[in-house]
Amino acid sequence: MGKIFAVGDIHGCYKKLRVLMDRIPINYKEDTLVFLGDYIDRGDESFEVVAYLAELRKKHPGIVFLKGNHEELFFNYLSGEDEVSFLFNGGEQTLKGYMSPDGDISVPKEHLNFFNALQLYYETDDYIFVHAGLKDGVPLEQQKPEDLLWIRKPFIESSYDFGKIVIFGHTPYPEVVVKDNKIGVDTGAVYGYKLTCIELPARKFYEA
Image 1 (cartoon, rainbow, N blue to C red):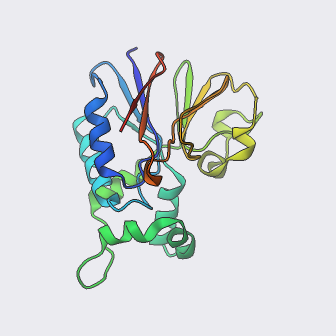
Image 2 (image 1 turned 120 degrees about the horizontal axis):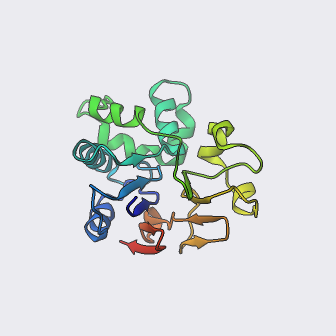
């Protein structure tokens, strides 16, 4: 197996994403690329991010795209299930990209297909990749989607041995968080900080 590259929360930061992708020395035939979710909201170019990633998936079907809580919020908004939470969490910036001149929201089929294909987690021999984190003592396949997408403090503060190193995003820090049982790579790109990618197993970091 080749190298693994995992990219943290993008949140509509299209320019940083393009810069970062140019810096990642990936060989798509041998290596694995994992995106940890939260492609949209808060940033001004969520539409551009999704369009780019959907096209990237066409070129390289082996890329792993995980679902973030903001993608869940967007789907809840589109279904009419919960409009308030999406807008409260930065959804207005996303809607601007999908709004027609007459004010209607229209999401292209390619984008809907991209969102519908997102995974809740990805596992290798040595690592577990997830958007937010895991609950202590619960087998991976029995973890609740709510925890995989939303958990923060109980996971961040946990010293539990999950059997593999957990690579996660969701909770932003100015720098990468490296602990014995987990590595967090959401470095707050949308808050003026960096967009980060980790290379495994070398634990080398690329930033934009």
